[in-house]
Figure 1 (cartoon, helix red, strand yellow):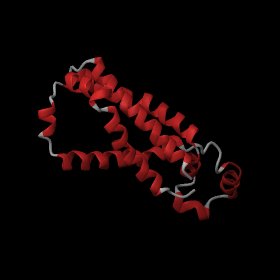
Figure 2: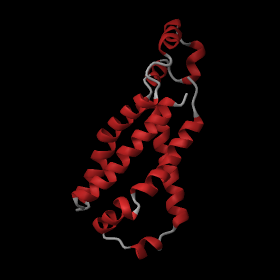
Figure 3: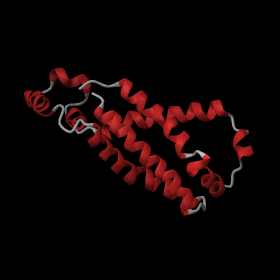
Length: 162
């Protein structure tokens, strides 16, 4: 199983597309700004190069870990010690990969695991931060929803794009 850099890159870049739609004033942007206590003027003063640059780095890091969460075969690869150990792996690994190397490698299955990852990883993290920051449930729901959608899309791309 080869590392698909293009799938990782595409998955990371989708965060901008989805974010543009999700946080648009006609979708959740106006509600988010109100719940966050921000105005258009305050947002316009931000260092956009820094914000978008670091957002891409963080999205890329998330996309890098997604294969472990959405591709079942990554577990088998981990059992032998990683990609560097394929040549020295026991015949059982090679037989397993010959039989099941593409099993569950679909966009739909990746979306399922991405969604589950969003529910069990992103939602609790965002909601806990919201609790300690004394933010409303709307605020947490908007951010959690974004990350659940993002992880669903990332999982779909990464699992389905072979």
